[in-house]
Image 1 (tube, rainbow, N blue to C red):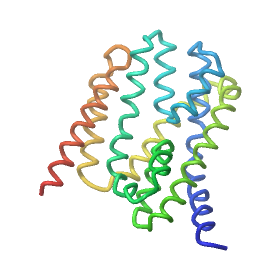
Image 2: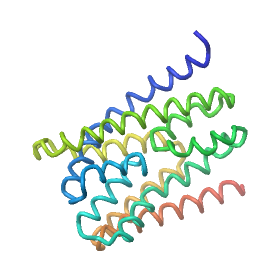
Image 3: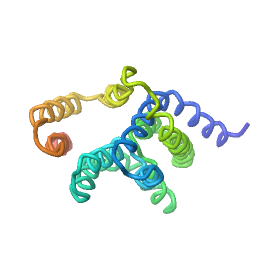
Length: 228
């Protein structure tokens, strides 16, 4: 079996354990679509267009609560702003890649893909490319299928199961995986604390404030670290 096949199979195999916690998240997505009043097919279309569970749920939740389209879209964009930091971090790994990969790769750059890609950051460009795409499109395929199923299954899940709890569990696990320096821990604590402090702001804008200030602090700390 060739190295390319092994790299692809490894990417698929390492993706599945990280996707399992996202399955209840997909059911939550189905519940949110049902409660938002948006047509199911239109709600599901956010999966291939946005491909970001937190941003999708933020967008549809705010629309369901009566927020304006502009406010909901802005909130979803800010929730997804952490991907800008992912892009900055992985930029050196993309510089020596073909143009088609530099365009396609960012489309599947979600939290789990970033976490796995960072573990393989020292591989040669071709190996990294195969691994990254196999991981990314494994998550993409599973997310498309599970969010589609969530539209039908999610509303049937009893409230006492508390499946919404899966979302914070998933992101906490990713946070623990990604925090490898005190600066990252500080940013996570500050952003989380500020989100709680501003939780009473309308239209969930406290989440936006916490995210923006956390991103600002992260950029500042990274700038200071690079100047040392």
